[in-house]
Amino acid sequence: MLDTFQGLPVHALIVHATVIVLPLTAVAVALAAVHPRFRSWIGWIAPAAAVASVVLVQLTTMSGHKLYERFERVHGVSKDLEHHKQLAGLLIWLVLPLAALAVAGYFLHRREDSGKVVLNVVAALAVISAVSVMVDVALIGHAGASSAWKPIVDNTNR
Image (cartoon, rainbow, N blue to C red; front, side, top):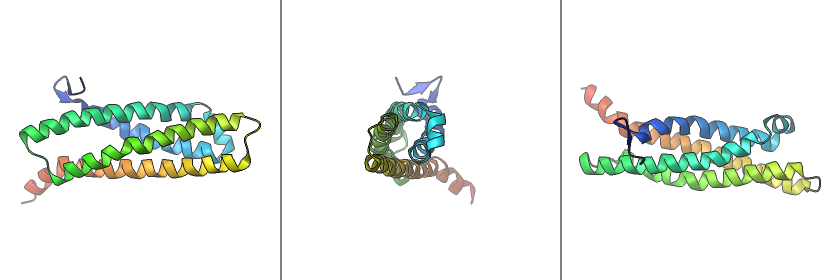
């Protein structure tokens, strides 16, 4: 299912949505956690985007596994591609807490009896989670781009 679409690898198509949606969602969750005016403006969109990001990451990972299997069969796997796969495997474990903290923060701020300490802890964890997601997305993207383009650049620099 997540192998090809009209002759192109699904991963090459869906990964572009992931690298745009995930960092934007992480920034929105972090801002909603620490900035009351932004939080009231963004409302339910930040936690909804964070939950949707879990699905998007899973689809991206599944399509990536299909593409990885093709490389294994045809070209073999480079160190860069293996590194890309390892970093990508971590992403879901960073996005799940981001989504949980975004949803928790949203509902905690809507309750009158939420303690300030609890709100501050959730906000701090949300910011840490958002930063970790953005760093991992950048590292995954670099490793993926290196695996795709480095051999071409290396072979044309001669």
